[in-house]
Image (cartoon, rainbow, N blue to C red):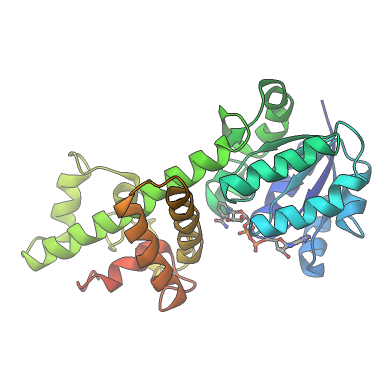
Length: 295
Ligand code: NAD
């Protein structure tokens, strides 16, 4: 079944996601504040809208892929009055759980349905249509959104009711941020003990230190040729986005009164790194601040 989809936020992620929906046969009307993003989306089969409201007006599904919670809540103020009753709102941005629940409640009060469906997989996953979607939704809404998400993703997980998708996203990225620092510290310590990067990798990648930060995104060049460390930490998952996600996790932990000490420390280290020498680099470049040569 094909849908009329309004897509708001055609940036690094939203652009290729909207293109995949169009490729799958959906009628996609897109909007972005940046004219160049609109032009690129149009070239990929997305009809450009004049405004966010224009993108929502004829849609039965409205997807937002925006920088932060405040952008989503502001966009909903424009989208909700323009949408038809029963429209399914899907927010795939990474935002905090409280904002996701607020967006859901606004949509429902306006006569719509809403799910949070943040993603992991980055720009390569968005382009290849292999994103993982973490979905917070009522059972019936999950059933409705799943075929749409399948056109953009390789895996779609129903995590629970509204907000559960965002909760899964920030918990997963808290693991990732902490584990990247752990892997980096281990390489730095190993180096100071005379251990080669390859020897540590050969042991830890098949022993109990095994994790994605080591085996897929190894922070030292050599052992994993595809990791950003082999190209001066360019591209990959930006340190600024890791800092953002850890900030959301830290905020949620504080709000819950939880002493997630390593999560808070990782948030602090990444915030400093992203604001400083890490701006624009892959998040694994944090190793260069941890005291070793790591090269
Ligand atoms: P981006 O900055 O490239 O894109 C955001 C787009 O939203 C921009 O083109 C901007 O012009 C547009 N925009 C902002 N306000 C708008 C409005 N009111 N109306 C219309 N358009 C508006 O960011 P991105 O990398 O595409 O990330 C989008 C979201 O996905 C973020 O929440 C991010 O945390 C999350 N995310 C990103 C990645 C990644 O690797 N880039 C991975 C997973 C999740």
